[in-house]
Length: 200
Length: 102
Image (cartoon, rainbow over the protein chains, first blue to last red):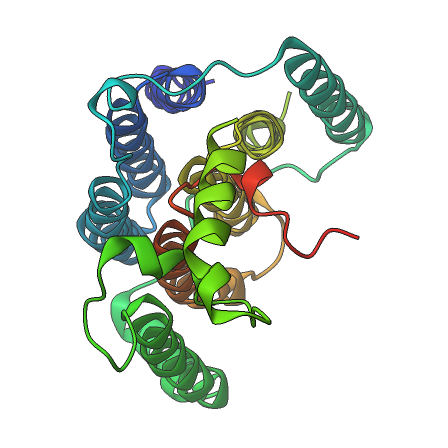
């Protein structure tokens, strides 16, 4: 197997594992960006240049910025929680690793035992012109639907993330917005207890 | 060993790392990033079958483009949900968002 592919795969896996085990959220997000760059390199190495560049544009350029903004906007209020996330309980780690091991063994055995036909001697060529003809010809309805999905999803994201018609509310009252409390005077204490439940 | 085997093993390893992020980490943003990693592993499979599979699989590349677009909108909605969760509960740990629990 080619050395370049081995290096790219190793890079992707190492950065992904480091991102998952990292205690610092910003380090995790930046390591995921490195993983996405490595995946774009894999696409480039196979010869799917258009997919590689669109993947790099969307993930490294767009989604990473959105993720970093979300990380910075949802920082905990107290300064001592900023650096490190709370540790994960050991039973949760063991259970998660067991589930991952089962999925990995099923996938691995299915891959190793299947027989594939020998690949073509030369790489298939897919020019951007051919890709455009495919997108605008047989798959044009899917292309339009993807545009509708993107527009709707981004408008919905704006609606969900916007602070509501009253503009930016003061912080203590913001917790009691989702629920219909029977007594309006309970709102402050309800949000306090919710916050305690969250930190426990 | 066919190069397709190596590609599929690599993409399933990435999928498992993403699954570990979803199952083990309780932070909402990390769970979302794990889901993105699993989607990327599926996209790698499409590209691998286009490159090394037998037959004409050009439609796989087109499907990857659509999948990237859907993943982008999913990330936008997911992170907006994370921000809304933080605004309402003052935390982003998923174990705290249990108000619908019976």
